Image (cartoon, rainbow over all chains, first blue to last red; front, side, top):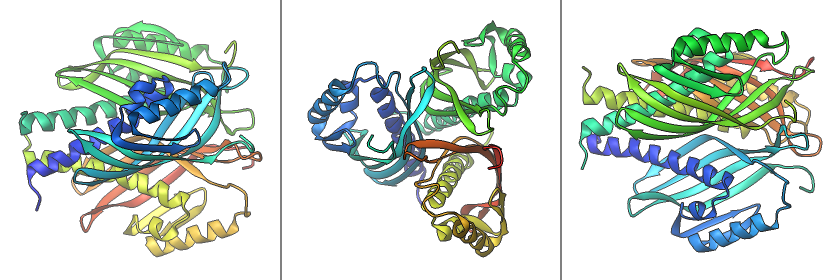
Length: 146
Length: 146
Length: 146
């Protein structure tokens, strides 16, 4: 039988991890690469369609470079719609999976489904805050050659 | 160090606010303007693509008028898919941001992305229930001229 | 005034039910019909566009048959994006409604909105785990003749 303190902690951890997953989407859509990079642990890793990076500074650089390569005016007003959060706690570690759908302005301005996929995450509590130790973004659906 | 009572309250407040954000979508999609208006505080305000309104009665009127202006048969079976809830509590006040995607039946009946945007909310606990004090709906993606 | 134990239990129940709703989507998208069927109570029922079934074994059979009928290569990489979870607890019973959007690879591989709808659920705590007693999947948006 686990006690009140641990039960509260587990509930709070799940809330904090949901916040982390959501903050990620906000930082990405605002192209706030500083805030984005601070969501990663000291030895954090990211890998996905944009490349891969390690440590907050390395991940910020990777994302800055990726945005710099994008054709201006394309992928305007990006929206990452996040969902299907599944979180497994294990003390100061956790794993999570979730879904993402990336929506952006099509040629006529209307929202268009660009890509869809999932995130597989290893998480760690670092100085009292949940961070990404490893986030892998898998793209399941994208235009041929896209 | 905050106590058990306050920790429980914070967790319950987050649940109650998620319910509020979700109830909003349900009332809107059912076009239940009465239920919709009751989600707002006594001095509540709404502003967005449909116009703006104040107080529950004023907001109900605004929405009734907006629905009356819509061409019958267009935008059939509207779905607001809501997500990316980010909630910041501050006692009996709170702020929230979230994303919405509006899906409706296209010419062949299939689901079509119509518009997408976000909500920026000021929330208040009023007689023990969380309500919208101010909800601003921002449309980021819509067809040109739409 | 309800006590700490009951308040914790209610919060934990909501988390467990969110997990159930999310696990359903994962099992379905992986076409793991065994895991899918185990989310239903001993006398569980499912009904929706694929047919209907009762008991975990009967529901597994229904889903195996439905997947066997599908044209190979069509509906590749299915994604159910789930959201708008609304949960009402009542002791060892609960009801829930939620939204689903089904996305799959279109002819060019890009994500396409295939169908959208909602789930109406009766839930039950069985041997300490939340299960579907009755899940009804309603399709609101689908192509004409689809």
